[in-house]
Length: 198
Image 1: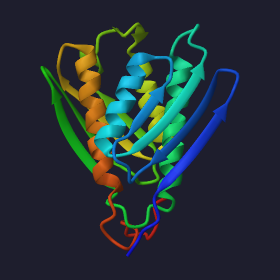
Image 2: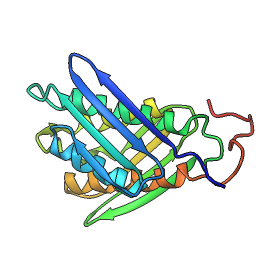
Image 3: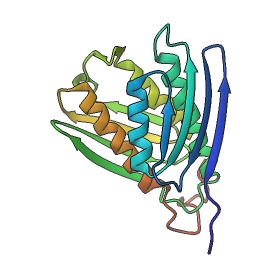
């Protein structure tokens, strides 16, 4: 039996960013990302690749100020695309969990595409104050925006590590792998005793 490909496109135009994004859940890890912030491009590429998604994303943002608006708006668009592509989330496994080491660093990601947005952000003290020229808080705000728009309960815990790049890479790969688990179809019905995910 053939199933319809789960895919969504999102465009966002504000005074701060112009974004065009297409996400295909049943992809092959083909990723083209250009946001103007290299570290964000790198982490988005890792997440999409490890999730098995195809992602085509361009963002022209107010990088002359900093990367905050770019990162937050990209996360909102990515979360919106995921929520749209999953529709009523019927048949998905819903929950994912991963730990992916990167040299000395280890992060843990647990998520539930439950319709109840929440970000739990732990181990922040392991991140250096500045990563790739931006305050570390940018990454919390990125994940918060993504969880909110995707209507997802997302827990990111940095367990140990010293290098900020390595810690973010561990979390980004873990997010991708957890998403890969959560979006897989393994039933005919919604995985909820109340009969819906909202």
